[in-house]
Amino acid sequence: MDPLTRVDAPVDAHLLAVRDGDRGPEVLLSRRAGDVYASGLWHAPSGHVEAETVVDAVVRETLEETGLAVDPADVRAAVTVHHRPPVGRARIGVFFEVRRWSGTPRVMEPDKCDALGWFALDALPEPMVAYCRAGLDAYRAGAHLGVHFQEPGDPVAYDPAVDRLLLVPGDRGAIPDGPVRAFAERAVGRITRWTDVSWAREESRVWRAYGAEGGTWYVKVHQNERFHRREVTALRSWVTGLGEAAPRLVAAEDTLRAVVLTAVGGRSLHGAVLPPEQERTVFHRIGQLAASIHTGGAPAGRPGGGVLPVGKLERHLDGARPHLAPGDEEFVRSTVEGAATLPALPAVPTHGDFQLRNLRWDEGSGTLYVIDFERSEYGSALRDFVRLSDSWRGRPDLLAAVMDGYGRPFTPEEEARLTVLSALDAVSGIAYGTAHDDPELVERGLRTLARLRTDHPTAPRGGTR
Image (cartoon, rainbow, N blue to C red; front, side, top):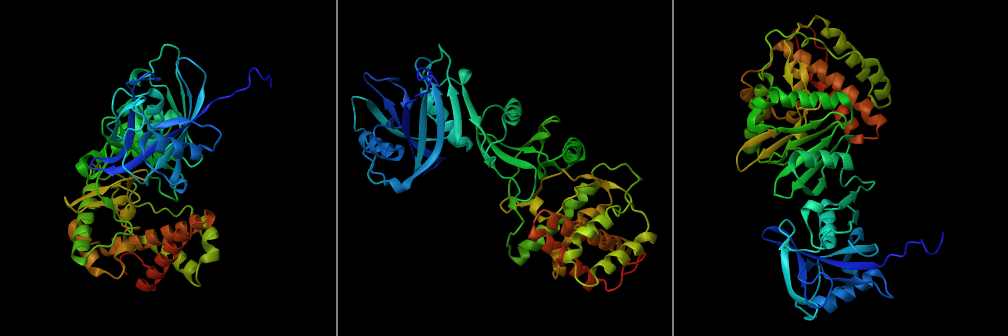
């Protein structure tokens, strides 16, 4: 490379001293003063890296500018910004997060700085150096790298009308790809922070998005077109009848298979430990919610509820066979064969993945929320009790609470069909878990088969247990 064209960018080290405040995380900023660049603008304590490492540089600059002593072992990499000012050459800014120090911050260089202050990350001061604001916005978004190339004539101070920050996604998906971010911001405005909240085993991706004006949403990219179509269709139709118990669809983008959803409250019931009385209350609400789902606008007599999903049984048995206990395969086959005489059931709206991990409980308000409608379709109401039924195993009080909330118990025919659906789902889960190295899913399927064989030593047939 011609040495005249080789990139030779200066490196800056920036301190992000972060503490917990009443409004959430706060960052220490200084206001430039005197005969210096960007005088009068707020900026993070920073300086050029000299004949030292970037870590040594931020420790040195922190002490020189704020009087805070920082142990290099407490310095954490936050984000790197490749920046070009309106006039001059590009530079590299390395921002470091520090949460431990000794001393009290004070103005140490009054000829360069006339104020220090703590500011909430969602209420940064103005005017602020655009370069520093880019680093803070990238940090809040969870990005590891940002590009901030300003154009000639751009102001040195941050101006949202000419915000040049581009976030570069990392391999770990801390933030969504650029087109997804652009779609989300067209729907809800500028997003300043992203948190990856994807379920560990799913190929779909979900982020919690925090808006510049304080709103919170969920942005989801579906793993395939079918899941996208199902969730969007449900959210635009019968889910609206659930009111506050479900998120609302803000926007959908079919090409990206992406949606923006309102945030719901509560905490997941997956793995939650509740006192017995509260458990019964929650399960009663689960039954009520299931009833609301199944009466959510289904046309009377809609066909299809009686069809059992047996088409993939042989393939699933092939995948699950190495894990099956003696007699499991024979039990599944006889269970499915015995269902041939079961009467058809009406098709109603179903959630399709109605289990504790998709249910959220807000103890303060007593509100139960349901999320994730990508497996929603019309079918037998029983499909929504298949994965839920494992949660009341050995707890007849919880089953009674669900049925009381639902408004009626299962009929003998429904119980027989539930056994068939549970057996099919167990084999499918074992096969999927085997193929995708998910031992938890394999164990859940094996546990379900063991429970079914204990409860039903003979395969269910037309209305008998």
